[in-house]
Image (cartoon, rainbow, N blue to C red):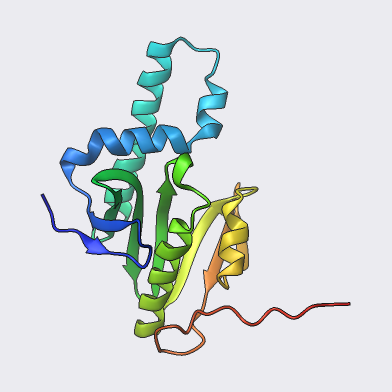
Length: 181
């Protein structure tokens, strides 16, 4: 088993994803793809599982092909995989390829901590962070709170970008909120 690394969230640790994590990651994939499960809800269970496994494998293959040197970590809580984060270093950017948590672990600050850790790393390396998120995904609000801005669209995806305030850790802190009367 690969060593665990801390995250800034007290309940979550990280470790490099391994081949033996496949079934747990498949469960995470199916739990995170409401769009796909809704589209095939009238299929029988065997057809649904077969389709989801094909989609899961296609996604993994695409990630491995498109981002061969990416850091692919699983998020661990009490010895269980509850999420994943995949980050690729590309020239002057860190690309957030995928971040996902099981539904029961969302809105607990874990995703915020994972992203804040990534932004601290990017600020320390003076790199921007980019991502693509499905239009209408509620995670857009989190990205915006952390300082990401809309930088374009690609089909059904919104491209977002974060640029460090300075090259020092903590350079991602959001500006103070001012009230408007």
